[in-house]
Length: 102
Image (tube, rainbow, N blue to C red; front, side, top):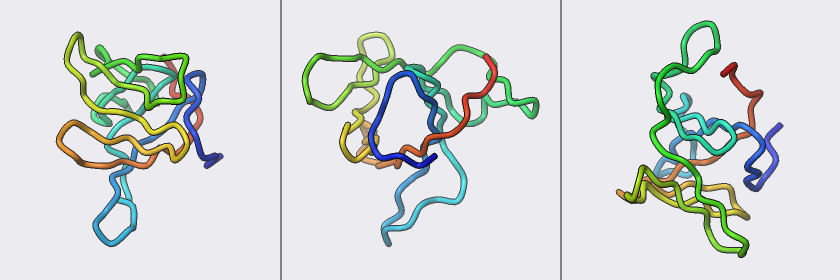
């Protein structure tokens, strides 16, 4: 299930890219279709609680998709590499996963 790319109708876990090229063993966020949630909002029963942190803003171009929290940009998803770069410069690899229950 680890296809490269980002598709807005799928779900992903976002794992931090480490300085040595590896991945953090634990996800930091879940991207459920277009909604971004911190991992702390995933309950043991695989349900998400609370409001999303941000939402993917789609465009009709081959540009990066922005994730917004209201008017504030949280970061961007590079479509080809499926890497989310947060506003603070931290990078996360998207890995497709089964969608948690809403």
